[in-house]
Length: 348
Image 1 (cartoon, rainbow, N blue to C red):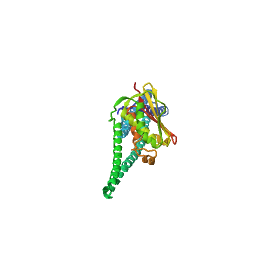
Image 2 (image 1 turned 180 degrees about the horizontal axis):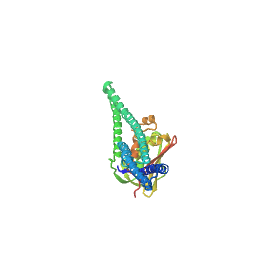
Image 3 (image 1 turned 90 degrees about the horizontal axis):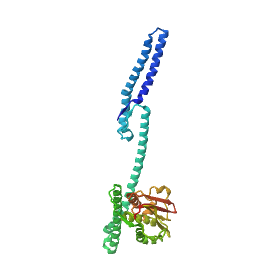
Image 4 (image 1 turned 30 degrees about the vertical axis):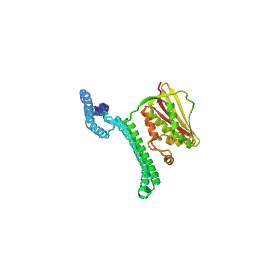
């Protein structure tokens, strides 16, 4: 830390002037009413008092007040306050007050942020526990029934229970793989394989893949118009297919019977396209829109779990789009439907 005494000069000078005025007045009264003093003395004495008191006060400020203020700075610096550690130590009380006030404000914001993170951590751990517990108990239940309940002797029942236990294991593997993928995205450890491909063809492939699921709820998968020519993008084909699958799957999962899922691809700039996926399903409450990309966050917890899934789909979608250095948006109205959209770089 540097030193700064300039602010105390003003204090020392004013104090010295006040003392000088007092001494000069006293000497003047003494000169006129008690005994005459040499006029030279009347000029030299005030000047001497002014200089002496100025340097004395300045010295006192530097040695005593500065040491105490510096100690305060040093103690605060131990808390790693970025706004104070590189500050020049000053004896100016106004500057010090502003520094401490800013420090307190920063610490208050930091504490509030830590409280939010702690709440998120507790909620996240609770959700992870629940998601892992459900398939684990399912697998354990079927295996215990086979071993202890005698079902292992029944060939058909044994096959049925083993198949159901296997599905539980698959769900566990899916959750772990998704968590691993998110972790790699967050640590920039997952490399993208960028290629040129037709986004219209990929959307159609996802439609074909999810057609049977959509048919179960009589949901129509459709484009907003007939695309007669391909629209090429430059991105990771496999990852973008995963984005499309997750978003369209969600539109089916939370869509209403005999509803629609409509996909639109539009050019919004010379080298940028926007993919919009719109449904007329349940929609999302306004207070939950800002949280839907959080890991394991569910708008309708009971309904979502009955539909299956790991609760990580939208978190993965957001990480994939951001890994492409692109943006994802969501607009939703409760009971009327939702629209998810994301940008991609256009290729010639």
